Image (tube, rainbow, N blue to C red):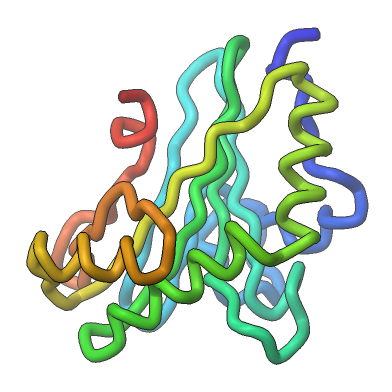
Length: 173
């Protein structure tokens, strides 16, 4: 079965961003997430699919820690799930804890991965990203990754005056 036919499970459909404004305030169109001036997107090309999925306050409605969302991309041979935390400059370290908790301890996230694998026949690759208007040194990033047991693909800089980062080029390597 080709991955172009992958669909988000029906139980999560209400948490998928669309091109029409809705009550999911974290959505920035069908392929993007936003929060307090930080934005990120994953724009598909021909033969690809992408979705933005709101995790905080939609898929996860409890008081346990969670990241803001996931950007999901697929083509005919692979699926990539990008966990995303949009974070202010003063709290970048907490983003690592949020990403790690979803990746390692959230059953609903693991169910999503299993559903995507069942549909496409290949295990999705998971990558984590922090989008912030702050700065983080490489040694501090490595320390936080080791402490929380999560590999953060990249800490992306974004604020109102900068271009919106597109994760597509960052997931294809």
